[in-house]
Image 1 (cartoon, rainbow over the protein chains, first blue to last red):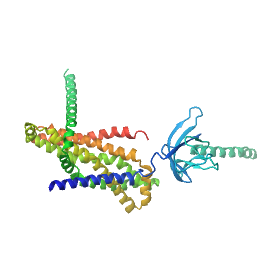
Image 2 (cartoon, helix red, strand yellow):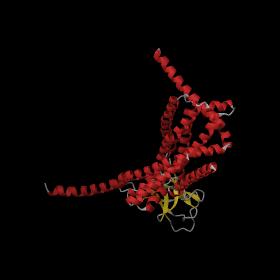
Image 3 (cartoon, rainbow over the protein chains, first blue to last red):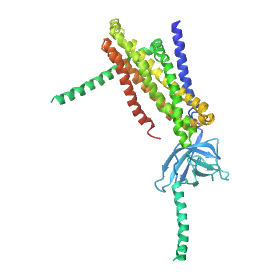
Image 4 (cartoon, chains in turn blue, yellow):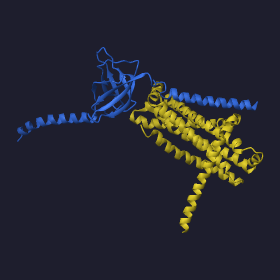
Length: 164
Length: 259
């Protein structure tokens, strides 16, 4: 009788442990989000990928349709080559353009796909032709300061000539 | 000359201790199949090691979850990132605190009792009596306990993480007022099943092997006196805690070094 009690207690313990594992896997981790297999691979070349990372989402109209699987540098053109997996359920026209966007002001970067108007769809393994690089904040600020300085520089000689 | 001799003697004694432990480990591995065949013994040990540790593990996990949520909130709210509270608690529990704290508690709760039990068996010459009856005490006494510890430890660790996350949920959603949907969805977005959860489970399995082995070894090799058993029990806690912390660093470096 005591043996049966112990066995039941151990069974409950193991069951509880497995439930906890399931809870962590399903409720507190991403096991439910789509797995591998039902997806196709597309690449895109960017002049600058900014802070894009592997496993970042690929979105279209804000909806996650895939993930970035690898990022590398093309040694000839010095462009960043971004490979992404897109769910097979989502097919995009051939002239789809890819942009690197940022979620919020300081959020993570992701690839946004904007579908074009062609009839043919992107075939697996092809490259997206039209791309827009990530906006690098430093470049933006630099450009802004440069413009400011140029404006000020244009006005300065005028002021100088007026008060000798 | 004396110094050099001392250095040599020290090195040799360390090597001897390691070699002895390694041979003991291999011997234990050899008799594991025999214990598998008598699984009833293993179940009794899971009950003694796992079930009996459940209360302290769950209570600690809940407390750690509560406190972690409160403390992390304090830091995160400064950056307007309070919504990520669940994520931070989840990652720290699943990747680090779950396996490590459980292993430390396990060494204190289950390891010591294993060492004391086997040490007293040895002191009472029960192990020698078994050998006289042609029963291998390693197969009959050590192997079921080893399996019991190795099976219990990952279960306890994942329970610790799960109850900790639930504790954080209670504090975050109930006390602080973070949106429950955000609390879960941010975790689901960022916590990777294979990289974070499975690696955490692997960690806890390794710690289970380390803690149980240290406890059994210390008990089996104890001096058969009351002082010897007391010393062995202390050694169990010290050695397994240090081993867990050292292994944790190595495993973390191996598992999580690449982003």
